[in-house]
Image 1: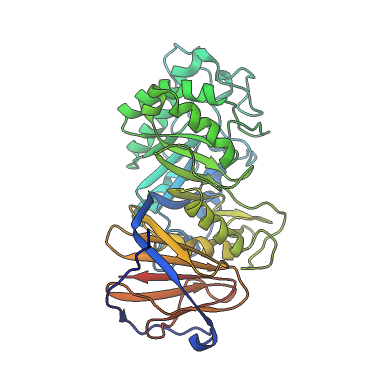
Image 2: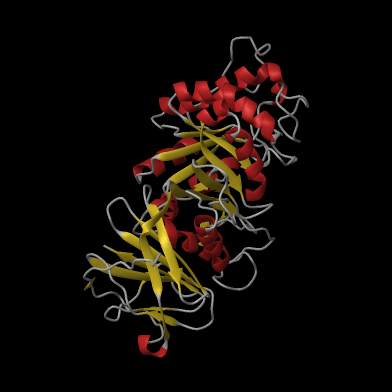
Length: 451
């Protein structure tokens, strides 16, 4: 069936001009947006605050705190993130970053004993961060556990893998939901709850193993408790996207387990999203960040840590994996990090990488509730995706992986049209439209917003 182009009148609004090749000097290309092809609904884009990295922000002067919060959550000054991933159990003061503590650090006397929960109203500054995010309009809060407390596991340690003892399943389910209840006391609604992080990988820090069958079985224990607390159950944050398919398949094959899981999730370390997970529920790419041992601020240096790498990863998760959410790891850290932002705790300063702006070009404009539309380009060097927001506006993302500029000269849309470029010299910067044309710079991400 022939794809249908967006056809309507275009009002061109004067925009700030950034240095780029003139439209006449670039080859013309066709981009076809099919409004009739509707794919996944978007839940949001976000970052993680696990392992107390957010405390690096809180330790800065208030003006620097505000600047970083703007970079994360403001739609005018930053990325406009709409989803925050919290770590259930963050390390206490004086404990290394790779260790966490639970809301019930001591065995209460067995799985049937009355619980002895501990709550300080701060959760190692995660409550502070969640409240800050909410002031910017964030409504989606995903709380995720790396492990059950050690006394609930067969290895007696929250670290180094191990599995949940069967007799502790109900107590662990109640423990997780109690965490959400503590946040409710602070005025934060935990919307989504995960009980495992990378259940197929044993880490020297907090980690716990589940087979796909074990995960599906535990879902049937946790599901009713989470549902009674009006929290969505997320599973299973596998180490890789392809590896996550086995967990999704096990849950989908069990009608009772399928009933409770509202979101299926996977990471991108062992394998990136190249096809959808086998479910009709929403799916999240819930954690990934590039490896490496240096701080890299570049947009396109071929390191695998640069902005282009992130832009391509987000594009592929959305278009190949049909992901409804993309959550980056980490938002902020210190030293030789691949986080979005590096904090210098000695000098009380910070630096921003182009990784942040690569994701911002998507997250600022593609809002929760958007639907991905069909999109193709005549030039195979272009990775194109299109979305319709709930307010009717449309967003077309054009990632030019080639080395030459091209011109899209048949922009048609309702209302005003705007365009932005993100590359080595620009961070979601407005660019000029030439009549009904926009020049798509090489090795750059161009965002076109219609309406």
